Length: 182
Image (cartoon, rainbow, N blue to C red; front, top):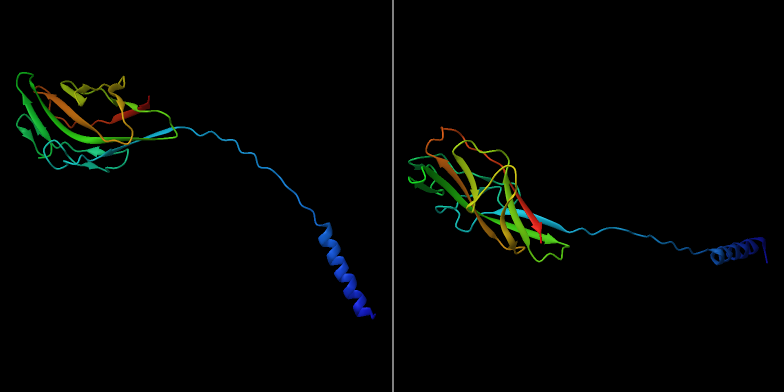
């Protein structure tokens, strides 16, 4: 056996020896997390959008929409989609438009939800903000529904009632909706 053969045998032995000494290891990864329930709310256009009483929402399909009710006076409204009603006996007129509220849930055993709303600022004199005939205020969330079904559209009508003695002004309001799991 020559020198080259001996080196080759030693190399093979060393390689085999290294493989025989290779170790194995194991470890564990422990994960801890909480799965929390969540509720989401979006606004959609009503299927009758464009008809009287159903104005289009800007940014529909999100939780941050706008609703243009035009310019109103005792003689009517500038937008044909706005529902306008003059009430001489109540000394006011009302403009309104309907839209859809859709509430979804995840990771919650809740069978249904409560819906309420609140306006951000006190209305000016002789102006009343309503949602589906519920008067809104800026101090308390007002109950709209007590047991709505998740994933189903719920029609809500925004109404602005203006007294005949209200001064000319631009009315703007932010309405916060609150969906609470039952």
